[in-house]
Length: 122
Image 1 (cartoon, rainbow, N blue to C red):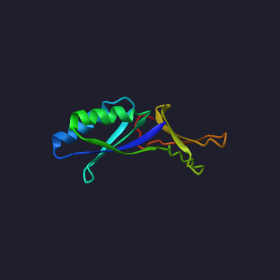
Image 2 (cartoon, one colour):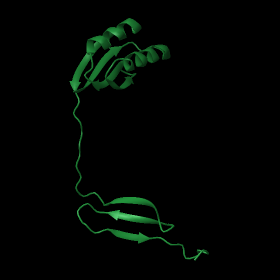
Image 3 (cartoon, rainbow, N blue to C red):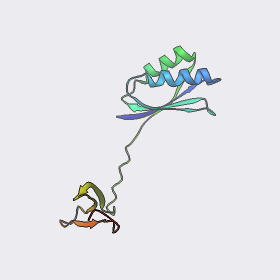
Image 4 (tube, helix red, strand yellow):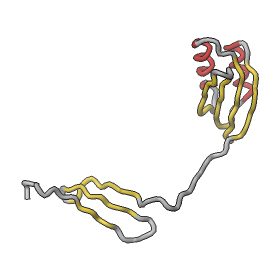
């Protein structure tokens, strides 16, 4: 289960910011870590995070860490049924690139050949 953890830490200088990010990213299951500098917080998102371990490691490296919130993150899946047909590129068809328009709702394919009229080979 994905969860988002917000931890309050002291971020006084660049060295402490770097330590906070390195420590947070080193924990198993972390997908993303972001700093909120105005609020002196680090926001960590991940799968099955061990919040106690993360807070303990931040306390060891930064001397202060306090858990502000732990909340689940829901996946955003949007299904848009009005998508335009996918454009599939085939490398060559008889030496000439071809655009093939694939519509999953129809069984017919439309081929559009692009030939250069100034071709000196033919």
